Image (cartoon, rainbow, N blue to C red; front, side):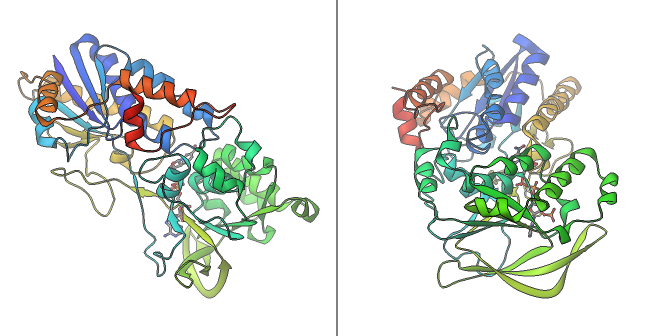
Length: 438
Ligand code: NAP
């Protein structure tokens, strides 16, 4: 019998479990650990609450989770309740699928001012992540600045712009909906240090800005490159840029009809956050872009900012005993191999890029490596006890392991508590989750 431990129950973790199960069927036992009592990682706490169709992929993970050879072990923090060397003594292979939960810092003066938030915290707040549920951002000012030209910046700008009725059918948590309902924000400036041809936004997500009830996107025509140059772009980016061109063509009369403006400011690199204890404005340097690289022009201006959300990417969290590449912000690896018997997958392997679906080939790929290592004898001669040994250790240490059956009870309680039309009302603290399993 092969025993595999997967640390992290998000998309990368469950695609890896699926791949292992498809490969070895009853010849494998897979335990999927999570520090939270609830599964699915970014599907639950990263994907925007108004993108329920993306969240629907969790049904596929559930099918994997419900098979006999895969087991969910929630409320277990690797590195605290159980160490990697504990796991190594029990499992033949350990796959780290812990994603990239920490915000990359801009490293700018004033970043610690009140109401400057990173996207991990801000997205975690509106998605009910227990670590960030108490963030309580101040939405009482008129101006927000969102930094970055990726899909997370779009998620944040869109969530800040929506009316209550546009959240119908979403699972945005009530504490966030309450604050957003009372929001006084009227202008959201998205700052990008490069130009329209260098955005990381995808067309579907960018196009959504055209259909907001009370907000309209604004792009300055002068920022757009010659239209003929769009032909050189790959099709997805070309389509996204065509949306920017549509935004630039929106007549003033339409902007005038909307309460909120989403101003997409290109060639704009933040250099400092200013304010008296609390952020009031962002100092920005104009850039030019040559051969895809931004450089400062020495021209500065200020953008009013009562709230700042920096959406510039993430880094992985250290795990004791596991090597870490500080510069890259992830685990050093060769096609997923970190050390003999220790692997990484998903954002923990490649950094925070790609869509949920990108994790599928990643999961299947890392199981290929594990299989090669089983076949070559690199994973030893077997004899490890897997989950039987873990259960003994959990009992000896008094760990309160949350099973998948427990999760289904938590899920039922969340569904029962849902606002009308919403799929669920998430528990936002760990104790409430644990209580809900009965
Ligand atoms: P991202 O796509 O890598 O975008 C990060 C943005 O931050 C880039 O525009 C980057 O600009 C900018 N940036 C980085 N460092 C900066 C700095 N020091 N100053 C100013 N700007 C800076 O990352 P993300 O938006 O966090 O998304 C992460 C991944 O999740 C992406 O693959 C994304 O597509 C995916 N995602 C998908 C969806 C969806 O499909 N609906 C939703 C959310 C996230 P430069 O390019 O100039 O470095």
